[in-house]
Image (cartoon, rainbow, N blue to C red; front, side, top):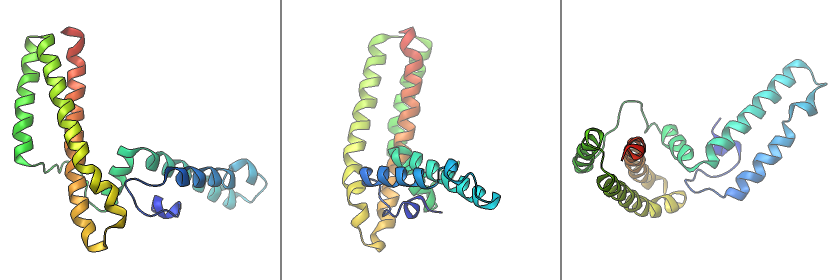
Length: 176
């Protein structure tokens, strides 16, 4: 079952978090296995399935990155191994990766801070650029949503790439 449908919420990158939490707690009470301990085994199994669905749905939809991945996957836009990133972004990342290689062989605090600042700036620009798309997605006409989803997919893949660079930088920090 679609998690948004399960919670009776519209698909959104920025859902009403209060409504999400209310529905989660309501279902947590309704599907708590202790309240169905005397029910037939089939009913208990269904309650356990719904309780698990409730937990999984809440974990996914309450985390912005997981929610974004979930929406993209539900539209068939996130496939393992297919990361079509724009060539200009990849060229920019090639420069950052070269600096990472330099840091690996010659740790330098100034270079580390410069690369971290560059990654932070790229992330901020990326976040600012996608914010209007995320905020307006829910109200878009159905025929305009695929284009918005493609933009979100590109953003998501770029963000994941920058996260990997940030993780690499964290390894070099103690050595610099």
